[in-house]
Amino acid sequence: MNKLLVLTGGGDCPGLNAVIRGIFKRAKKEKDWKICGSMEAFNGVMSDPVDIIKLNKENTAGIHIKGGTILKTTNKGNPLQYPVTDENGNITLVDRSQELADKIKSLGFDAVINIGGDGSQKISQGLFEKGVPIIGVPKTIDNDLSATDTTFGFQTAVQIATDSFDKLVTTAESHHRVMIMEVMGRDAGWIALHTAIAGGAEICLIPELPYDIQHVLKRINSRYKDGKGFVNIVVAEGAKPKDGEVIGEDRGEGFEHLRLGGIAYELSKQLKAAGCKAEIRETVLGHTQRGGTPTAYDRVLASLFGVKAFELVLEKKFGQMVSFKNNEFTHVPLEDATKTYNFVDKDGYLVQAAKGLGISFGD
Ligand code: F6P
Image (tube, rainbow, N blue to C red; front, top):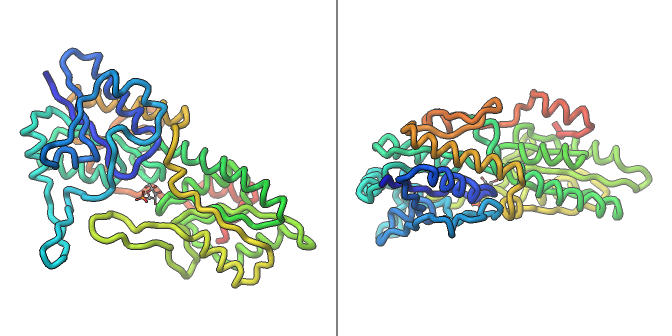
């Protein structure tokens, strides 16, 4: 009997359960595979006793329509840089990947599938270098991995943001207000840009195009005549003014990234300081963008990623990450998978087309 270990790491994302189910269903077509899940990323393996469950027909049935992950997840405690606190409260980062690789081996796993974003796939590569037969599956609502044309979760996040944007348009119009809606996306403006186009925003602010507050104000003013008018703005959490910094807080050791958020309120203050006369309201969508049921598109993408990942296991193509490139389900070496961050091309057609639709980037 062959044993496969599946886990989900990093922030959750709609579609994770569809990948898990896809792996399980495809594996059942083979005779001799036992599929297990490590709870809360690799914590399930590292803990003593281990927290590993057997995946079966009952616990995977129908889960493709559910948000979250039945295996739970975490974006803390990277085994390559594990935070250890000494008696004086000082934190040092320790590489525990060899210990983890040895444990996976001693538990008798023939293969591992790690479903996660850039941080998780760096861990996959680290474990692969320690001899773990591992396959990566990319996930992120941010669409910030360049090794794949798209990731599941992104379409769902854009749909949730667009639904909220539509609601803000009617209330902006009723009150002649400026509505600022902040969306996620980390250092990439994909969610903001797609939402702005889908919703018909007047202004879209993204990290790739730092904004000039005077240009933003000019666009707002062009929408008001005799005090009447309204404006809807989408701002990415990683957006910043030309001479400013991103708004975020350091979460301390053990976390990979800054916690971004708050630019909607900052922008509101900047607009008032610059002389904006209209009433402004701010909405921060936050984690609603990651919750709930995945769209049909994301369910299909996630399910096919699951099937493909298991097929790579059968072919023993370890050290690879599943990818969807040029309309094809394929794979790329884990080593290359996280090398290049997928920024919005500020000179590309998507931005040009958005400008053609009358969207201002405040640049
Ligand atoms: O990477 C996904 C994401 O939702 C980002 O868009 C956001 O900046 C971050 O994760 C939030 O992380 P947390 O769940 O730790 O607050």
